[in-house]
Image (cartoon, rainbow, N blue to C red):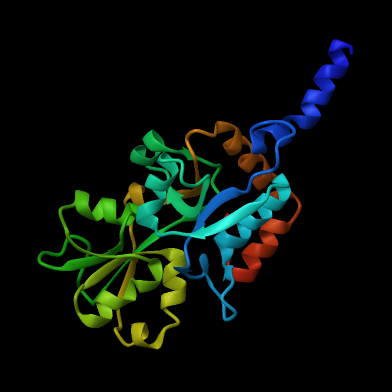
Length: 249
């Protein structure tokens, strides 16, 4: 076999090797962590199916990679550890790019731009003394609030951010924009009559990415390329329109 022909065959088989680890081996499913109570990004619909913007984006990415993916429910405070300890391959959750995350895991190319909103009663601004701030455990919002030495109330999921406010346990919350859109449809949240302010801190605004197992740089490359393809072929825009009322890319 000529060297040129061998190189050609290797190029054809490379994507398969990247995703399975060895040529000829049975294809193994990629372990993908998703959230189940973070509407409209990832949640269970009326039939119990995991869906939402992030969930459907990762399904489209897996289809583009021709990879078999198994979705596993997790929480935001668990995904970093799960990636580091090789318990999952991809965290299909919205991770803002922080130095801490960069030092521990790989981040795929951004799949949308995120903002964070401050929700509180009239006159209660960020840094207001003596109040408790609701945040999701393991989030960039929690990390920021801790750095400011604010009193915090941590909840497991984005869908629960309104609960400490309704119960009076927290007097403010830092809420991702996409989650805020969903919470503002809830009547009990509306009755709180909170005011919202866009957080200007750079740590809370920026591109959000899926997390990738640090042992698998080849998987990051495959995910990055698949994301680019679904943006070009219209699949990304279709999913965007299905779950969100505006363009977030």
